[in-house]
Length: 262
Image (cartoon, rainbow, N blue to C red):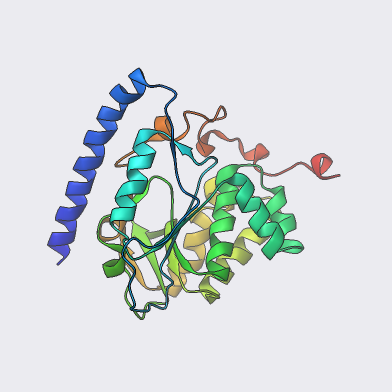
C-alpha cells in the first residue's frame, strides 16, 4: 500500500510542477487574473459513515482571491476530499472567530500577534479545539484521499517530516483534544515570555514539536499524508502581499510593542 501511496505522491507532485510552470505563462498574459476560493462548500460526495475526526477541511489565507496555482491546489484537495465539507477564512474572519469564541485571555494574546502566519498558527488550533476536522496550509495537498488517510476511530493525526520532527502544516483532530490544548498553552506562554527568534519558534512547528515529541501521538510520515509546494510557491502565494512571506518578518516585530497596546 505504501508503494501505491508514494506513486500517487509522485504523480501529484509532477502534476503540480507542470501546472505551476504553465501558470507563469498564464499570469504573464493575465497578470491581474484571480480566482475566488469559496468560504464554504458542502461535501461533493457525502458519506454516511461517521468518523471521530469531523469531515471538515479548514484553510486560511490573507485573501480569498488566489492566483491560478493556489486555486489549482485548492481544486486538487477538493478532488482528494470528496466526502468533506470545506471552510475557508481570511485574516479578518480569523480575528472575528477568536473574538467571538475565545474572548478574554486567549483573544488578548491573539491580538498581540502581528504576523499573519503566527495568527494562523494559533487560530488553527483554536478552530480544531472547538470544531475538529483537518487543517491544511494553503500550499499543502493530500497525496492520498482524505477518507483513507483518516481512520474511522482516529481521534487525531499529525505529520512528521525529516528528522521525525512534528510539524503543523497538517493537523487532524477531534474537538476538545487535550494535545491541542497543550500546544495552545505553550504558544500562550511563548507570547507572555516574549522569548523567540522567529514565527517558527513563537507559534509554529517548534512549539508544536515540543509538545508532541514526548507524547509519540498518532502520526504518519508526510510523504504518505500531505506535502507542500507542489502546485504553488512563495511568488504565487504572496504576489498581492507587499510585505511578502512571514519568513521575512524580524523577531522584534512579531509581537505588538507595549506602546502599541497602551
